[in-house]
Length: 236
Image (cartoon, rainbow, N blue to C red; front, side, top):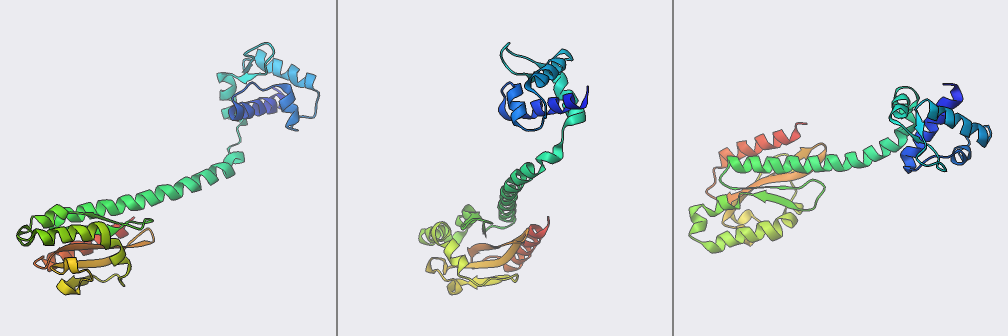
């Protein structure tokens, strides 16, 4: 196969990949890659067809590559670097979405793990989203103080569903664990509760994670649990 035929095969395959339609001599000449006549192009295409690299689906149609043509193209004539800019642009847009999803999944899993460690509510702000994810409301509702007073229980549910996102965003929270006990809580509905909060970091994204439960909670145990989950979130 001479140089023009090899360039011709590569050009036909590139165009066919893009259009999925038979490639004729006119399109090839319009590309500006070949400084020869249309008859010469057709003659070379005929030779490539005779060698089994191209085929003509209809008499009046252009050519399409065969499996043998693709195999030769991949082994010798493909130029991956020519597609790098397109691939990189696509990759970067999808990578950003992929990493955001992974950040969120990591926080969801951390909250779930924390919920399995404590008999309280675990919550965290969600990376790249203006909302709070929480689990463990059933844990709190099983506590005797809330079973005895359904109004307190409904107040906690209301805070979790409607007010926690706004409340956390108004707090000045750093890496230390902050304790809000009883009336120290901003919201009246949880004056019968205690809340522990601290800042977490996932791949440079900061958020808030914490625990909500009765004032009778085990502060020492919960402090260690929250510290461990926060450290876990830092790991890659």
